[in-house]
Length: 145
Image 1: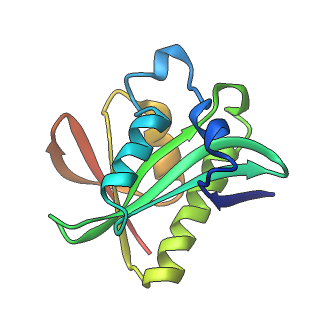
Image 2: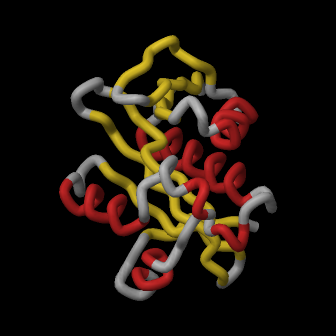
C-alpha cells in the first residue's frame, strides 16, 4: 500500500536520490528543483515522499497556484526502478485525496508537456481532461472532483 509522507531531514537524501529514466528528464523537474520551489513557497507547496512500505518509490507535490487561484498537481515523479508498477496512479490518487480532505477542493489542475504521453495517459485514467489552454509549453488539464 502506497503512502505519502512529508519530506523531512530523515528522508531528504532518499528524496534527492530519486531519478527518472534519461528519456524522461525533460518532462519533470528534479526533486532538488521541486524542493527548492517548496522552500520558496512554503504556504502553498505540499511536497511528499511516496513510499511502498519502508521503500521510497517516488515524489509528489501538490500546491496552490495563487496567480490563478486554484489547486494543482505540481510535480509527480516515480523513480526509474519502480515505474510501471502502479505507484504513479496510487500516489496521484492519494495526492488528490489530500487536497480534497485538507482544502475541500472541487477542481484540481495540472500541466503536461504534450509529448509526455505516459503522463497524459495516467492523468486521463483518474479523470483529468484537457481544458484547451496551452501555456509555457504545457497543456493544461483539469480534474473535477
